[in-house]
Structures are given as C-alpha cells and as structure tokens.
Length: 111
Image 1 (cartoon, rainbow, N blue to C red):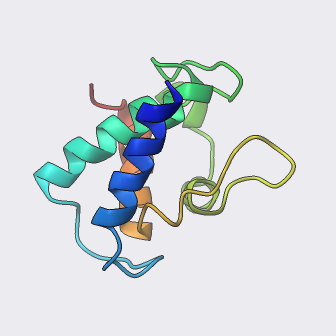
Image 2 (image 1 turned 90 degrees about the vertical axis):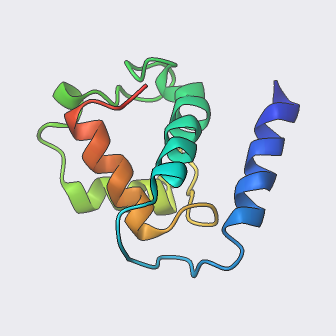
C-alpha cells in the first residue's frame, strides 16, 4: 500500500521536525517506542520480511546480527547502503532511536 507508507513517512517527518538529525539522547518514550516498533515492522519489514527473517534485505534476527558491529548497524540505519536498496532513515530517526532499534533487533524485536 504505497499510500499508507507515504502517510507514515509524512507523519514521522512532522513528528520529528523539531528533533535535530543525529541527536543522541535518552531512550525513546514508551509512546515513541511503539511508533518505532510499527516503523520497523512496516518500513524495514517491506524488504527484510514482515517477521524480519529476510527477503530482499538480509535477516534482522538476533542470530543474523550477533557478529555485526553495533555502530555499523546504527550507521546503516541512518545513512543507508549506497548501491543497494537500503535507504538512509536519518531524516525520520535520531541516532538514539537508531541505537534503540539496533539494541532491540539484537535481542529480538518486539511485536
């Protein structure tokens, strides 16, 4: 559903308009954590599979990420991977939110 995806991106853009890109800070609020879970399940799940077990993109399961560099994963989320379908999400996520996502992917992402 392209419209739903565009709507989510637009909503996130509005919500984060006052947040400096790349800002680090405290753990996201419980409400924001719910939004981030939805974001990962929908936006990341589009390529990495709705269960994050792989698809066009690699699996994002704890086993698949076990030996990956934490900061490298954060960087991939924020800036993407040139030459691949992986976009950078920095306009929509702060660095602390990307870190929260990686921590949770490495331990098993919440439903």
